Amino acid sequence: MKGFFDTSVLVPVFYGDHVHHQASLELFLQFDKSTGCCGAHSLAEVFSTLTRMPGKHRISGEQAMLFIGNIRERLSIVALDGDEYADALEAAVARGILGGGIYDAMLAHCAIKAQVESIYSWNIRHYAQCGPEVTSRLRTP
Image (cartoon, rainbow, N blue to C red; front, side, top):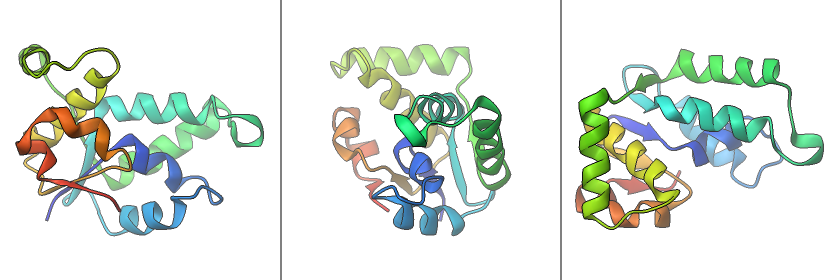
């Protein structure tokens, strides 16, 4: 079984008091590079989120890079090449995906490229417009 991790699952892995920490961490630890992956863009999203959390949850860039290292050690990183990126944009436009929804659409294309069985996200609704090939694979941890 191959699983794809959305950013919404990766961020809680690193916050013990996050409402989704336990479920996200347990799922994360079940996978390795041969069975789990995430999109290359998720590394930037995780970094951005961790370094801009409010109050005591905000961490430094150096700390965030340690967490990014943990993700890279455990999961394969999936990236789209230039043509795949353009194709994914065209597919998103055809589905009426606009604005920030494009980021989830790009991650969905990474998941399809990796031929995963499951896409794990706490934001199922964000993937609703991506079509049945994506929505049929969506799972919460």
